[in-house]
Image 1 (spheres, rainbow, N blue to C red):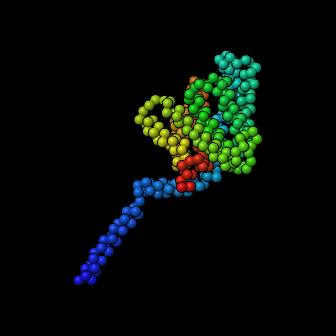
Image 2: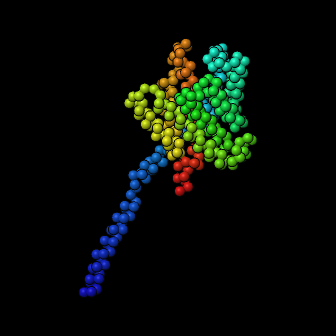
Image 3: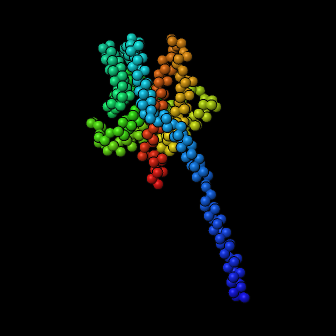
Length: 304
């Protein structure tokens, strides 16, 4: 009887333990909602990478051109409106007559020369410094330093220029003269972080400009999430693509200067805004091409 009870006890307890272990194993193997989302996003990322493969080799060139296009347009505008620019600087900004000529001439030469160097990938460090200097001097010269919208947009343009700087250092193994002597890895890492953060300031200005409606609120919410993700470097390529699409659609429908009459008072402003947004889109395209860099959640996930 003892033997029978022992056998019976073994038969009863054995299967129940196996069933418990099997149920635990099945519970462990069941993917959590977060894991399922990650799996789906990975599939979508792979799909986007496959679609974008033909364009990828051209992204750096397209991004660089778009970043400097606002400076090329500005140089052309100064040349075609030379007398109007002189009158504004002399009569409204009270800048002496000879200095106005020198100010405009130096700005035009700097914008054309530095933009050409960036497109050609030659002396990018000095070209970026030159264009950032142009942004600062124009803000002071035209009295726009305290214009919040202008300030935020130009911060974003400078973010795009920092992305150019970071992109150029990928191909170099030496520190350019006159800049902090950080090694290549550190320089690229910190300038990518600064570029990412500055790029999103245009959207901050967009939030506070214009009339509020349901569609605008939806776009702001989506864009705000994408901006935060770009800044912290979480799914940064996705977020940058979303911002590129939002800004491109906004640019075409809001800053459509080509639909305005030649003498419309807002034509120059719309044209200026249009090309500035193109420059920021260029910076985002460089971000899509390079990735967010080491100071980002995307890179930390690879480590841990």
